[in-house]
Length: 170
Image 1 (tube, rainbow, N blue to C red):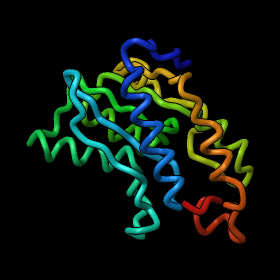
Image 2: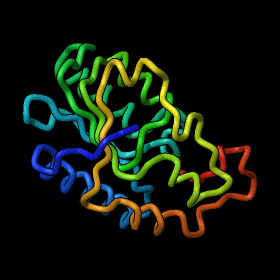
Image 3: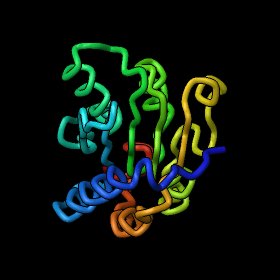
Image 4: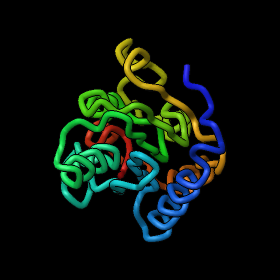
């Protein structure tokens, strides 16, 4: 089970993450946003681009990891922290493991997103492969509260054919 992120260590990044998520929602996009921080500096950030790219892998977490690797000219992000507005899916966790991230801090638990969107069934909601627990720390950001952003986004977001998009219009 994830523990709460220490407020002192992630407070400034959590606030920036919240502001970016809020801005994405205000701009008509989903509030899925990710920041990648290493050695106290913001290395990369990204918002979900699944719909814009017609690419089911264009999650904010993957894009942030890709951008960080490009910016640092390495595939090894040892020591880095990924902050995300929502707990990463299994695909994003796999990328985080491959990049050797030290820590992931997230806002909304994936299981809660599944409750907000009953037709959305994320693979592995509430489950983590054993390697995650051994390889990196997972911590939930309690403040700011990301749930209101996702509640606002999920209103009216159910799609007619849940099988076509995993039950969510991203």
